[in-house]
Length: 327
Image 1: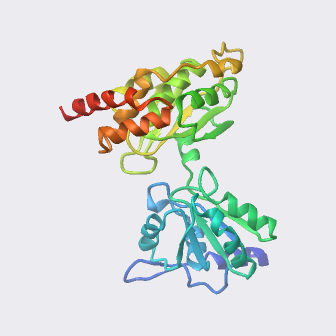
Image 2: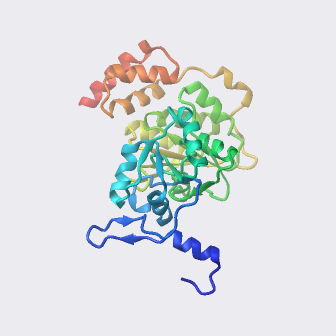
Image 3: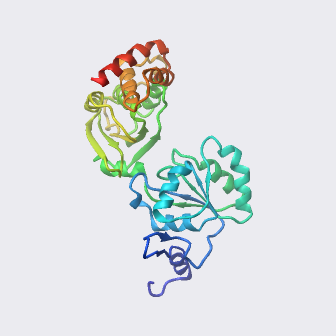
């Protein structure tokens, strides 16, 4: 412990004290001398590599009264790896409204609750904000426990400017809405960061190319995992590349911001006149789904719904792509 430490410093060090079982290597996050303060803790968890979790996160997860998990099965893997025994409660976008009052009641009764998403920081394009807002309104302390972030990991590895960036989250699923959303950022000079499902990547690249022109970009795939990839080039080359090989895994797309004085193609007022998604957009979406093992029928139904087009416009193409993938 550092010399001349303040009481606050000492308390902080005591709260993150950890012990390790010499036989199993498990971290005993409950082996500390102080109880957690009543609060709602927003705890970042690994986005891939389990070794990226922080000591403080393990301490909070091990000592709180329960952990609210987006998918308890995913969180159970992390808990098993580190020997954490804290009870898990399912908490996700489909039940957060139903459980809000009950959970705020537990907080007001003096409990310490932690929220985790499947990966990264809860509340950032993940569940948690609804409860955090309700807890704060009820006078309960809300404590972020920062850690792994797909946004920051992608920015760090994208080789694009990092002094200023704009996080878009998940662009709309349907092509027309997505094109309109991207065009609204056409004149933004900061680097753009967004999450893109693999079967939406080609369509998103196509819409970005139409909205921004041919800017530099980085397709950041499977961050911190075994097959991590930073594919760096331009939007047009990225579109060609991922039409050739359908992307897999979780993707964070980073795009260069508008240059000062640049001729921006997009016109904010013309978005309503956007045409239907192109054939390459439809095919790219179908190919991405078919490579995950879904049937042509299911792929055509999903893509038709996502892109706002008729299923009969996707079914025959889905069958042809499926036949190509068999060869």
